[in-house]
Image (cartoon, rainbow, N blue to C red):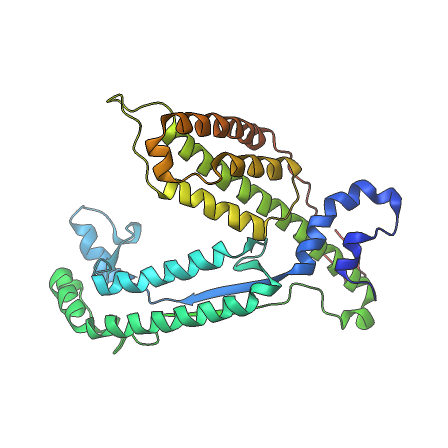
Length: 331
């Protein structure tokens, strides 16, 4: 039985060399990546005004209520306890996107097979952290409602507020199949082939999305660091920059190493060139060494110029989405 990994090494038809070279990254994604979906349950903190309330508000402007859109804020989202809850959602989202690649299906991204177990374990830990933060928020719920009553005045409605906030915030994850179901092979072979073509096109698009995301992120990081270490500020002194300007570039190199789809030789070469420019260089080294700073800035400026050209001239793959008919034909 030939697997997707086998196809990376063997082409059945040598005349397909050009097509094969463009599809190998997509085949690699299909062979080494799993689809992951993350979803949130999140309490709404705003509510639209009722028709009567809109009419009352419209009177102050001499307007008609039906032409006015208005809402009210149920609780103070700037409260420290609420911000702790939303911060954990941010951590979940950052972790998910930092360990995965985009996929052209809403709510789905691709993660490496060997990272699935660690991914699930980390999200389980973050869910516990979220539950603890929600429990703490619930302890402040009484004061949040009292503050809302004072601020909303006659717009306050106790029916807008549940008894507890526990259970109204949550995170779930799963690993949906993005491959055509095998039972179609027997039930509708034509439809199965059409589904295979559609999935192949989606992975081709996933390669493009990943390449674009890496190129844009890399260009932004190189541009920022180059700007900060080049020339001088208005006071004639070297520009101030944070340690994160160097650390973020290092984190990108690691993520590119583990998640890069190797679909663009030019991008791979530029990443290697930038790595050589900053290898063994710390933020402190750049601050204290004028010569080193100029040398690194000069090398990164060349990378930046090439990246800018890539972003302007980058060809876009022609992705054909096929819609399957019962006979297996595409429209």
